Length: 190
Image 1: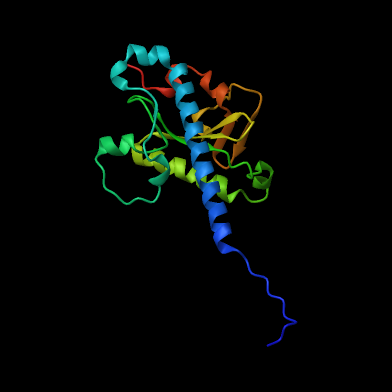
Image 2: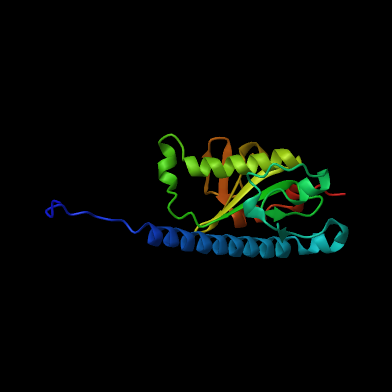
């Protein structure tokens, strides 16, 4: 046997445990971001929802992160309830997809042919919107950054802010600026 050979052995068990820890941490972060979003939405629309208690309120959808690949046949009511990350009041016009973190996504890379992961988020939002017959909206919160909202650009002809960005057929703007729009933008009002 040749003793001059030096073998390098990777510790695959340690690598797998590290990946599992990161996955758990990102899941907790996603839930926290969703709960913060639910709280903000319920605060923003508190007066309207108080006038119409039968519409329900915003809440985090149970199991929201694990339904993307499921092939189940649900009733219309269940489909409306379990599409998107956030369960929305009955007359709310949008399906909400929430993302938290993903700090490695650099928007600058989107200027060179798009960004695969951002495209997947938007595709997921659009899929949920189509399935529920609602308008798609992606809400993304990176660590220590503003919360951004992505809606189809035809939904808001004149953004109510000086700062916004078009990405493909989407409009991205500060979530708080979007929340400053009237209730009629978000709800089918009686």
